[in-house]
Image (cartoon, rainbow, N blue to C red):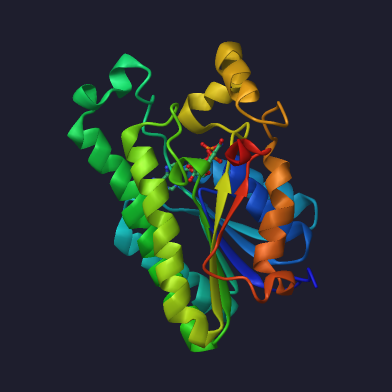
Length: 259
Ligand SMILES: NC(=O)c1ccc[n+]([C@@H]2O[C@H](COP(=O)([O-])OP(=O)(O)OC[C@H]3O[C@@H](n4cnc5c(N)ncnc54)[C@H](O)[C@@H]3O)[C@@H](O)[C@H]2O)c1
């Protein structure tokens, strides 16, 4: 049911954190995986490590801000491997602090910075979905998995405005595309993580104990998740185990949204 052997997967933002965990779980289960990232050296480093462990992976430098480059990279993957089975539209950036910090307050949010977040977290995610959908539609099969956030499900005081807006927007993009592409057996879902210990926001969840404590208090499980803990859900959504699941958003948040 969870078999993904020889399937072809493409991941954006795969050099670190959740994107790396997606790439790892697919590779560990026998998929052929393209790890793309703006940090090409990081993607190459992680790919080399996975290849040394016997997995079938390759690295690619891709800045998702460059919209035509996304299409080129995904087309090249299909040209090389003959198909695309799973696409993780994962790359995303923080919008800085939320409204309980002075710089995150509505009056102080720079519109330029807001638009930058919209470009990376929304437009680039759409461009990634679009580039993958073209091939999957033709194949009459495929999975698109988008990394949203619980910040897209409700107001999270720690999230900046641009982040809150874009994470909500991509959840509805997922619903919209899922309804169009269901007829082609292309299944599209969003993952909405709570706090995971990654490098986002300059690794704030790695280096600021007081921020870690706040997050731990906001989660019924009272801890921050490790990136590996996203692997089960990622494999589920990329495999036949989720064959009747589309257009949905699945929180993985230690119970945070239950409060
Ligand atoms: N960590 C969390 O607590 C959390 C919670 C909810 C959602 N998310 C989402 O998870 C996704 C992955 O973030 P993460 O937490 O793993 O952070 P991370 O910083 O560890 O990883 C993000 C990766 O994306 C890459 N990246 C950044 N800008 C890029 C660009 N323009 N083009 C291509 N790659 C780019 C970075 O180089 C990095 O390797 C993001 O969409 C983020 O919003 C994270």
